[in-house]
Image (tube, rainbow, N blue to C red; front, side):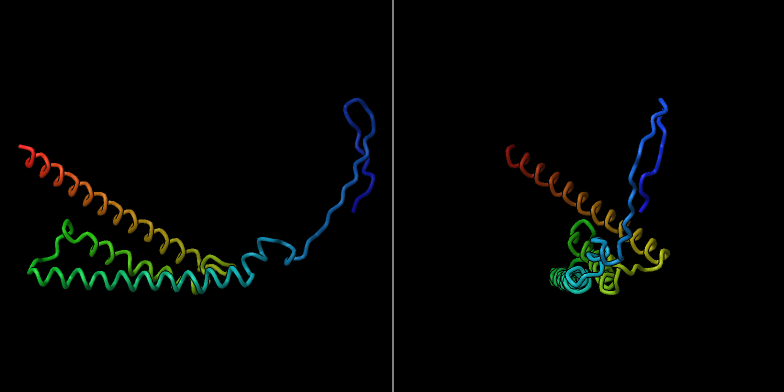
Length: 155
């Protein structure tokens, strides 16, 4: 603590300033407590990875169901008709990998090495853009098909 530091202003009057510095222990920081506390650990390393694994399992089951339905109708894979299967084939494994990364400590006090972090999350964003584009293309084609069917019905 520094007491009574003398400083002169522009006019020449002396000003007195009391400065005090308090150093906190590492555990006094609320952000450190949040990232190392048990609620954060349970949420980020247990609950979210389990939820992600469940979603990946549901997506895998959807891929198998879509494939079985397609094979019963004797049709081949078509991205325009099997968009749910395509999205689940791409997003399911990525969701599982992200769940594994969370369970290993990503998003907490311990992060993966920068190279792995950058590669994994950059590719994750790229695949999400791909599946979003596939969904919007499919939605646009379905909308145009329904619009043309409605126009033909009115004739």
